[in-house]
Image (cartoon, rainbow, N blue to C red):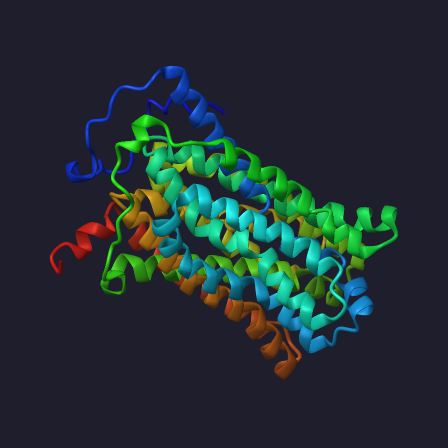
Length: 424
């Protein structure tokens, strides 16, 4: 991937930043600008790899972890819900921290907290401390979810598609690698604590580019990131919250309940696990192309293509779960849930300024992750009451309808600053 040549065929791109936010900086040496840009790209990519490793590494060895810590089912349920609560709570603080400390210090501190939390929780003597240190381990993901779209908007305003591709693809790869590699590491090391602690290493490596990176002189001419007030009055912000929340809820429901559903339909546990792995694998190449195509074609056709995969996937898994075509339904779900990188791209495309991107990203993700956390819990509660998967599947279908309606509003070209301008 290159960061020096923007796609020549871009159709939709972010509107230019208002003149008041730009001054005329001195022209820097090209070599210095290129070096700083590549360091920033490396920092974003390496950081993104770690944003979900604290989550999926635990899920891979949850049974051994519960045995080792004597963790009850209730605490295990809290552990699986903790990531979305952390993403919502800590993510809401990210814009304020970014304005105060800047992106370099913010990401460095978040990755350092993550590394310490990874190591500390691995040797936690009891379940309570494990949960506490897990909050530190989730810090990088919670902050990075909000901070990275702002960094991309601020330093790569004409390359949002390419940078979001790099970010979302690496995030998907890190998610899959941690899920797939933790159990084998546990088997080789003979200790689940080592299998969890080892993920502190890539987090420490990701700190290096942020320690070396200095904003290029061209970027130094940009005024410090401001604050956009009144986001709660924006219809776009609320619609983005619904869009992000519904797509995240569907994704977490699939990750949390797919294997249970397939086993209940007669599939072996190993085969059910491979179907869930297929969903994750499909997401990786789709995450590569979605942000680029969103910028080149505009979000409308990309959104319709992704959403067209949901109806046959929901109906197929509902009616024929565990059948010969289960792989097809899971592949379609993998494509459909790639609405996630589309939403990440829209955080930059639906704001004119870094402040707008920060406000929109923080508001949508904080509230959206609360919706996402409710989704898997609601499915389990409803299934426990009814003993049938029909109502949970109806719930997923309803989330899909809300997702589609919210997307119809967001894919139209509009900006959060324009909605708030009359009031301001």
